[in-house]
Image (tube, rainbow, N blue to C red; front, side, top):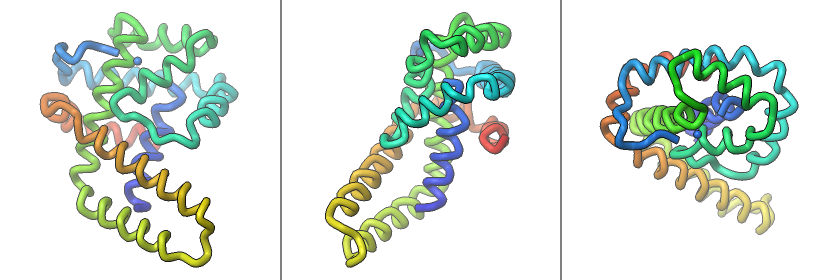
Length: 189
């Protein structure tokens, strides 16, 4: 469970402060994925200026598991009206995106495909760890019924997130696969 949570949290916190929609009919090309990664690197330079917005967004999202199919878009929706939105739009346009909406859609697809790749690599172990943790929690005499209900809800959310990520289109997964290491590095930065 720790490995899955680590991957989810690393990626979630990497994209959350930046975080919208492009048509699935568009091809997710190698260049588009590379441009998205470079735009995220450039956008990270804005992060120190918008720490309060990041805290607000973290607080709003802390009790829910992200929808990996819309993680970037949903975060951008939360940013609307904030100075960061306009600044981020300038950055993404400098990297070849027409708008934050098209950048967000690309980000949604990149992120979902990346999570599908990561989860496929650890799926059996992650599911087993989650089931073991759930059984341990259910049998724990040290947890209240309320605590068990909260943990159960979190586990169900994680399972839903895994399902959401696994729904990534095969073409998107193949487009993102060559960039996995760059995405991992970005998540660590």
